[in-house]
Image 1: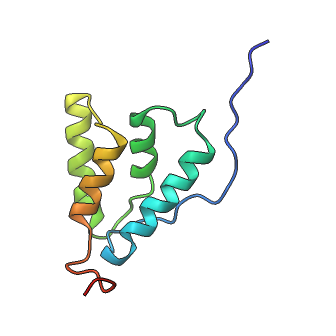
Image 2: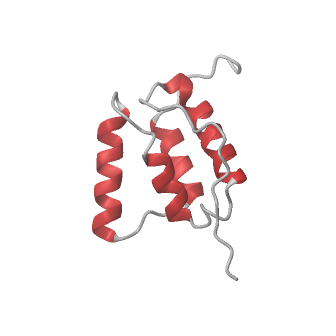
Length: 100
């Protein structure tokens, strides 16, 4: 008998609006959720789409729309690692207070 995959219900990531001080936290929350559900989110595309669903409003809206439009038109959402790098580059603080 085939087993059905069930998502482990843990707290989902907080919505991300592009606040640069919350980028790292958002990525970490996504990582935790994805890692406890590896049988559900087992492709890079599923991981990227998962994260995109929590990117709402604020300054991230235009970035999300551009990224999604390009991904759909090229049928290429890229890798999860590349997505995180692009997101971090676009929404990181000008300086990191911890290293200043």
